[in-house]
Length: 297
Image 1 (cartoon, helix red, strand yellow):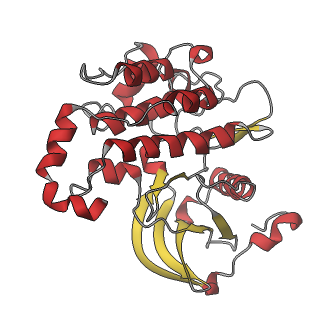
Image 2 (cartoon, helix red, strand yellow):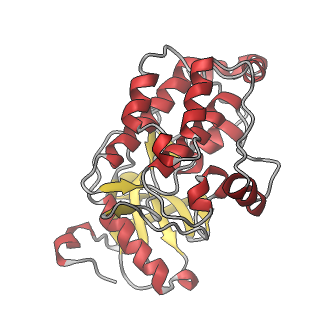
Image 3 (cartoon, helix red, strand yellow):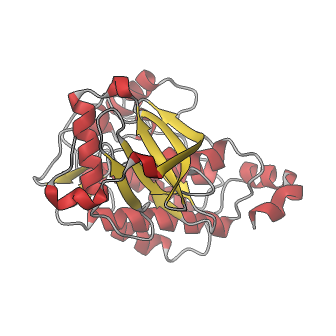
């Protein structure tokens, strides 16, 4: 599946790649740490048996989209392997892994309120860049597993497999893909959506940053579709959150997409904050991890 002639310089010879340990997996295939021309990279390798026409089209779309993106809060695309049965996307390697893993699986990491705010700002800056592309680029799968953290604690948006340029007013939603716990109600219902669907997902990520909880952890994906998409429910926000944080999350979760703020407005709001203070429960849990605190500073 060769790329268009104008993008041939993005093609990587698979013989130039060295695969290391597997660092992630999904329905598409697996992600490995590796090396390319002496540089540490991440290699997103697609399973041979999953190479349906739809998968191949999404791979091509992802490559063409990522090749256009240059921003400090977007994972840097380096190239792609396009030979039959060897499809892979090669990006910069992000040392600290995903934000999801950091918040919900790595029990040793301590994130102070200032760092949590910087992470939220990084995500919003990356998304503001995408939404100001011409045409607008809607991510459609914004979630903490698709946010990667480098050695300097900078957060970068990745995984553009479901992303689309918004050439018209709306995009058609595809409910069979993506992760319901982060998705906007209009997306879950299969209705037309736009960049404000990403804003709803950002509200869920803010929820994770301040509560330390996985979204809708007590429900399975189909139940989330029902309660968020069709019953209009939202996750309960702890009463000990800063009212400004509560207000921003609730505005991101507005049922009417037009009532949700843009990322430009979100940044303007968060830039007035000095920290993103999590709940007392999160702070108490972090104090209990004090012996490991130095490792995260």
